[in-house]
Image (cartoon, rainbow, N blue to C red; front, side):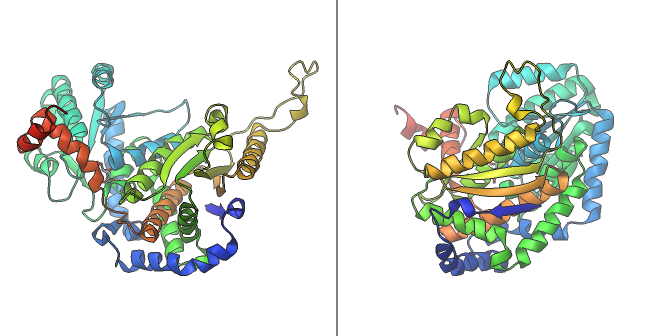
Amino acid sequence: MIKLDYRYVLDAITQKDIDSSKERAMAAFDMLMNKTGKGNQYLGWVDLPIESTTKEIEQIIEAANKIRKESDVLVVIGIGGSYLGAKAALDMLKSYYHNDFEVIFVGNTLSSTFTQETLEYLKNRDFSVNVISKSGTTTEPAIAFRLLKELLEEKYGSEAKNRIYITTDPVTGVLRKQVETEGYTSFTVPANVGGRYSVLTAVGLLPIACSGIDIKEIMAGAKDAAIHYQKASFENNDAIIYALLRNLLYDDGKLVEVFVSYEPKLDFLSEWLKQLFAESEGKDHKGLYPSALIYTTSLHSVGQYIQDGSRVMFETVLNVINPEKDIIIKADKENLDGLNYLSDKSLNYVNQQSMYGTIMAHVAGGVPNILLNIDKISPYNFGYLVYFFMFTCGISGYILGVNPFDQEGVEAYKRNMFALLGKEGYEDLREKLKGK
Ligand code: PA5
C-alpha cells in the first residue's frame, strides 16, 4: 500500500491553496473517468486490472514456464514503454545478487559495443527472445531482433522460431505479420493502451513472470489500486491530491520533480517514472522535468545543488518503511571508528533518520518534499504503485492541459535519423539537413 504525506510542502503550498483548487483537480479526474479528454482512445489501461482475465494471466505464466525450462536467459528486445516497466519490476523485486534466471534487455540503445558484447555473451548460453514493440517499426528493437534472430538460427536451426515470443499490436504492424508468416508465439499490446501505460499487459508481465515473480500478486495490487483510486473522494484520494500538488508546485515556479529513494532497488522504477511523466506531460513547452536520485548516495554528489543551487525543484520521496532485510550495528569495545552512538540500532533506522534529516534540511533550504510511504517491497505493492502513478499522471496531464497519451515529439529525431540513413521517403528532408 502507498500513503501520501504532504506536510513538507505546506511551506510552499497551503491547505487553503489545495482546497480551493479541488474543482480543477476533480474536473481532470472526471475527464479521465468519463473519457472526455484528449487521447481518450488510449485509456484501456484505466480498467485493465479490473477486467483482465485469469486466462490471459495463465497464458503468460505458461509461456514463462516454458521459457524458463528451455533457456538460461530471456533476452527482452524493446525500448521506452516496451521495456522500462519490466526492468523496474525486476530490479525492485529480485535479489541484488541471487537470481536463478537471467533476463537481459537489449534493443534499447544503438550502441554497437553493447550489442556486440551481448551477442558474444549469448553465444554459449541457451536463450529465448521476447520482442516487444507495439508499432513493430521502432528502429532500435527492429535492428536488435534482426541480429538476435541470426544468432538464434545459427544456434538452433529450424528450432529457432520456437524460442521467439512476440508482443505487439493485435492486428497491425510488421511484427504481427511475422507472427502470421513464421508462426511465432505471440501476445498482444491492446490497441487502446500506449507503451508507457502497458506494464500491466504482456509487455511487462511476460518478462516479469520469466524471472519468477508472482504476476498474479502484481495484478491483485493493481486491481485494488484501480478500485480505490477510481472511487475514493478527493480527500481520500492520494492520486488526485498528488496530481494537484505537482501542478500547484509547477504553477509556483517549480520546474523539476526529483524522484528520490533511499533504496537502490527503486532506481529503475524512477527510470520508468521519468518516462511516464516526461513523455506524458512534456508538451506545448510545458511540464515538470522529471529527474531521479538515489540517496544517500547522491547526497554526496548532487546533494550540494539540491540544498543550495537554483530553487527550481521539489522532491518526491519514495519511502520504503519496512526493508526486506535489516542489520543491527553492534557495539565495539575499542570504538576506534567513533560509531558506538549507533550501537544496537539497525541500519534501516539509520537510513530512515538520514531521510528525515535530509527532508528537513531540503525543506528549510526551499525545496518542498512530497513523501510517498510504501509499507514494503512486494509484487502486490509494485502493481499498486504503478497503477497509482499512471492514474496520477493521467489526471496531472489533464490538469496541466496537455494530452498525456500521445508522444508526437519523439518523432522529430526519428525523421532526421531516417533521412540521414537514406531511408526511402525521406529524400527531401535529407537534402534540407545536408550542410547543417
Ligand atoms: O510510451 C510510448 O508509447 C513509447 O515510449 C514507446 O513505448 C516506445 O517508443 C516504443 O514503441 P514501440 O513499442 O512501438 O516499439
